[in-house]
Amino acid sequence: MKTKPNKAMLLMSSYPPRECGLATFTNDVVNFVNLVFGDSLPIEVCALQNHKNQFEYPSEVKYILNVTSIDEYRHLAEKINNRDDIGMICIEHEFGLFGGEYGNYLLSFLLALNKPIATVFHTVLPGPNDKLKKVVQAIIDLSNKIVVLTNKSQEILIRDYGCRESKTMLIPHGTHMVLLNQKEDLKKEFNFSDKIVLSTFGLISENKNIETVLYALPEIIAKHPEVVYLVVGKTHPEVLKKDGENYRNMLIEITRKLQLENNVFFVNEFLELKQL
Image (cartoon, rainbow, N blue to C red):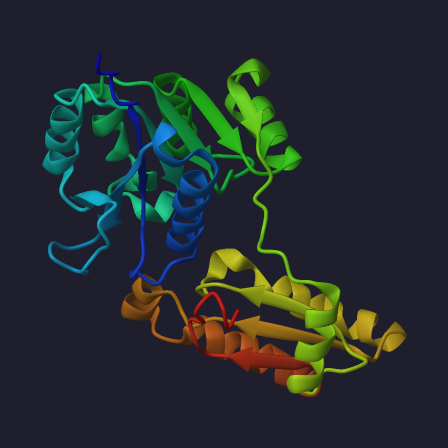
């Protein structure tokens, strides 16, 4: 007697080889779901990109969505609806990933989809204007479950967007483990022995608010001169197209004005996970 194969979960996100923090995050999710659940929870990916035929993807990527074409969202939903072997959709959500105002093209996909939907909000913005609030509330209404990564995000969703607490689930972001002895060896390798190392990593854009750390550093360094701050990551490709290196140059100028050159280091690269 043959048993029915388990239904798959489809992850919608940016995905390697696209250089994007969320792509790395989603790749980690795929790897660890496979490690923990194996064949009992098949997992597929719908890769988000801004143009057609942009990347060569690995085998788990079954769909590619050109996020700038609103028609493609509906067509994709129809394809997924026709598959009985997909049990749910998990959307890794960042506003900049989807087309339209505040990424509202995503709503056409959600409206057309006839599958259970979990949406993971990687960014939750407090004090929304009316347009932003309507988009987020629509995503909440059209999702079966909302996942947040921090207590504060959950609090904002409930307070500013009227989301029911019972509809949310808090799953902390997490990171890769680095053993204590490895940290000390790495500090020695990069000449940071006896330093307290702070770091920002990922693609650089204004929403990182790196300047907030820079303005706080003089007071911190006055008490703890051993503190160093690493700003790791190249400028986000979409930001680079639109504004060039304006934001990075502003950060470098703030560093110079505050005389932080001996404590702040910029690494203008998108590092592979092992390097990071």
